[in-house]
Image 1 (cartoon, rainbow, N blue to C red):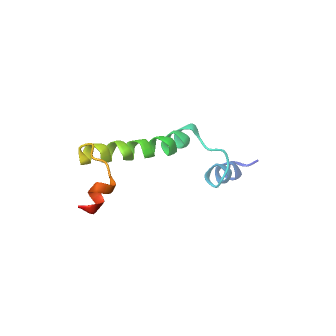
Image 2: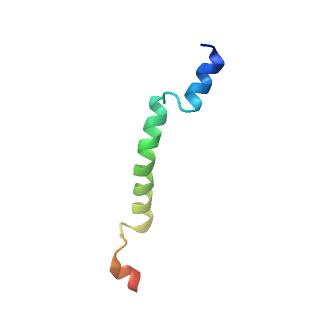
Amino acid sequence: MSRTEDLRKNLFGGTTSRARRFGMSSTPVAVVALFRIWTGGLTLTSGSLVE
């Protein structure tokens, strides 16, 4: 297999690298943590929707 074919396989549906898998799993955790910090730990409840 040539180098171009290896690159194409890795970019378009081939095996994924550890860094990419780590990024895909850690991004939602980081987003939740940032929103918790920005809102001061407030959560969305039915009471807050009515007000």
